[in-house]
Image 1 (tube, rainbow, N blue to C red):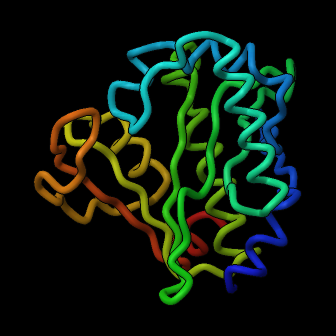
Image 2: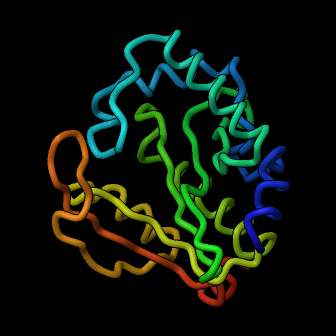
Image 3: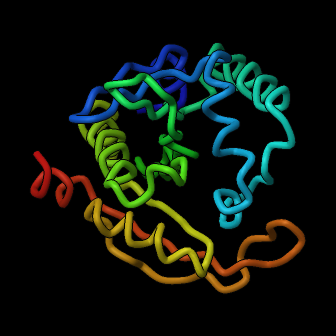
Length: 193
């Protein structure tokens, strides 16, 4: 796929349904649910962004995200519980490498739902979309050194740890070592389809 095709798809990202989840486009009305976890320093400790200072900030962020959707320049879904419709996180693609038919995936889940297999369920759904619908060859994920919980999630999704890049990312005033994991389409299809 090329950039124009990806933008066309993500102007109105398709809804995806799993056993317990619905992945859908984020809405401004998600601000209360998103703020619930986005304000938590435990959640943002290993992320590139700081905790949201108040719910108005979260509302404005979601308005901005919707402007990116309109342009097809945002590739994330709201992760919602099927039974209650509560938004409990996000999962999607952080970037595409069109020349190499590859994408990077990212995710964040409300800590009230950690340890329940929610993140792997959402990630596998996004990976399936990437490999089957977008015909990607490779999907990668990165994490800040020390966030072994995130690495375990990646490995539960069939990804292989590929190593560290020492002091390779300047985040929140300091250089961080970044770990990376990846999976190839043939590996995913053999394991999950």
